[in-house]
Structure formats: C-alpha cells, structure tokens
Amino acid sequence: MSYPLKKELRPAYGFDDVAIAPGQITINPEMVDTSLTIPDFNGSGSVDLGIPVLASAMDAIVDPAFAIQLGQVGGLAVLNLNGIHVRYEDATEIYADIAAASLEESTPLMQKIYNEPIKEDLVARRVEQIKAAGVNCAVATIPPTTKQFAPIASEAGADVIVIASTVTTVRHKSKSLRGLIFSEIIDELQKPVMVGNTVSYEVTLELMHQGVSGILVGVGPGAACTSREVLGIGVPQVTATIDCAAARDEFFKRTGRYVPIITDGGIRTGGDVCKSFASGADGVMIGTPFAQAEESPGRGFNWGMATPDAALPRGTRISVGTKATLEKILFGPSSLTDGTQNLIGALRNCMGIVGAMNLKEMHKTELMLAPSIKTEGKIYQRAQGG
Image 1: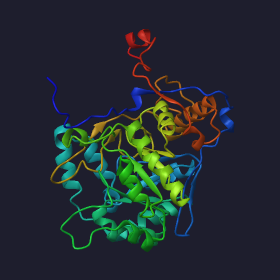
Image 2: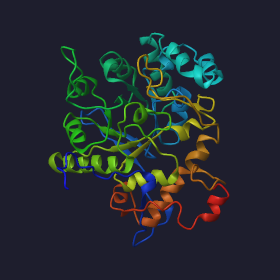
Image 3: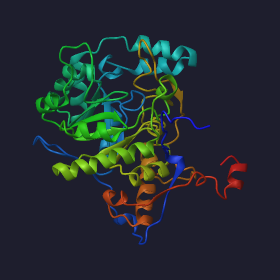
Image 4: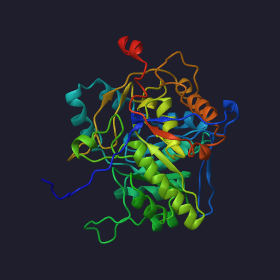
C-alpha cells in the first residue's frame, strides 16, 4: 500500500561527509592569495584581512589582548558587546571563578555573572583599547541591544559591527512597535555590518538586500553550542555554506555587489577549513580551536554566547585544554597529525593541490560525497586511536 508523501527530506552534509578532489594543475603554496576583504557599501572604507579568519565573539576566546594579537597576524577577532568585558572593569577573577566551577555549577554561575549590567563606558573603552594597538576592531551585539551599543562602538572607532543571534531573518515578528531594521542601522552606523546566523538561500538573499557587508553561516555546529539538542534546529555546515554561497552569487549577478560568506562554527581541523572554502565560503569564523590557544582568556575552557541565557541556556562550558600558541595554531610548525594546528598552512597547501590562486578559485573546486574519506585505509591509525 502506498501513502501520500507529506514531507520530503533532502540530504544535507557536514565536513566529515565530503572530500575535496585534486585539481588538474598544482601551485606552490607560497604563491596563493588567502586575503579577505569585508566590503563597505557606505563609503567609510573596506576592511582588508591578510588571512580569512575571524575569531568567534565568545568571552572564553576574545578579550582585547587576544583581539590585538590576532589582528597583528592578519585576522580579525570579534569582541562580544554583551559579554564579560563590558560588564566588569577587570575580568581576571571572573575567568578564575568560571574555570574553578564544577560542570554542574558552571551554567548557574555564568547566569549570575552575566546578570551584571553592561556599562556603556566600557563598550567604548574596549574598542579604544584595541584600536590603540593599530589593528582592526570588530564587535558583536545581539539584535535587542544593537541600537544601544553599536553606535557607541562605532563612534569609538570599531571597524566592523557584527549583529548575531542563533537564527537571524529580515522578517521578524515581535511585540515591539518598531524592531531592528538592518538597512536603517547600516545607514546610521556608516560602517561594514555583518549579520548572522543563517543557513538558507532565501534568508541570505533577503539580508544582502538590506545592505549587509557579510553573512555568518551556521546554526548549532559549534562545540559549545547545544541548540541542536535543545531546539532541534540546524543544517550541516557544508550544505548550509553551499546554499548561502549560491545566494551570494545570485545577489552579485543582480547588483554587482559581492558580499562575503563566513562559515561560522564546527571547524576543528585544517581539513574543515579547506572544505569550507571549497563549499563557497570567503572566510571562516573559528571558536574552540582558538579557545585552546595559550593567549585566549578562557583558561582551557570555552562556552557559547547562549550559555548564560537566564531562561533557556543553549550552550555549555566545555573543557578544551590549552594546546598551543596562536601562532602555532594558525601557522605552525606542528608535530601533530590530527590537523588541529597550522590551519593556514593547510589551506595554502590545499589551494596549491587544487590549483586555486585565490579563495574565489577555491569555490570552483570539486566536492564529492565521501563518508569514508577519513576511515578508508586507516585501520592502523584507528587501532592506535589516531
């Protein structure tokens, strides 16, 4: 007996489901261009990065010192304007308390810590602290606080404003008489504004028509995020990136404006970085691998922006350990064989193998469905736990 089909499920793929096919030509890795430009469509100036890497707006990862260090090597760290550093003058003891708490105590403790009011003077001072070092400054705020804090950060000299939430759309319904309208806040700030997160073609296209300068792609893949468990939502990152990149290309055809796509979350290894670009990304936003850096403030722990939510925490504090310096994680040298260090070296080598001179050429790389790519022929590695 046949039954009427009520809902059709399409397959979706994450990093471990696909493989990158080698190209027909090869290039010396030192010859490839890994730069990323975050455009500005209002005339105040685009932001140029030497490496296409952003650090997630997580308090365990980005403090002003880390933002300066990543900026000095060509990346861009995003400081959380709803986080610890704009609530407390000195966060040293706060980090110590979070690190010392048991797993059961950690979320209630953070709910209490994040209940401290945000201080507007600290918003400006944190931006000024980063800019004083001569690097680009990016800050992130959630939609409800954008109108309050984004203008302060912009006035203090922030180069990029990120408006981020678990899921972002243009058509949001609320009880507010007048909610956040992206096109209006972009016109007001006169700075590049990046928006996320999303995973779909339609929403990406609508956000781009608002005038944004970048889209963050990813719902729930981060190691510290539990949205997929708590809410049941999410799309695997390869499929999400492909869909959103298709919207970027369609928008470019229509308008001549190229809006970069940033794959945000779930990236653990150099292979994940490379697959992000092969899927269509222009940049990657990295969380937990940076939480493992000696320079990160989290003392070997990481937690998401939604962890201290007073009503429905959608993250958890995780122990990730301190593994290496920021320099080694990004550029090596590395003696590890698991792909967790020398991420930019991996990207350069992959670009050379597929014959991509720049990141846009990486988009043309062939991807294939290959669920056995990490296990085929690796029986001895698996037997040794490798």
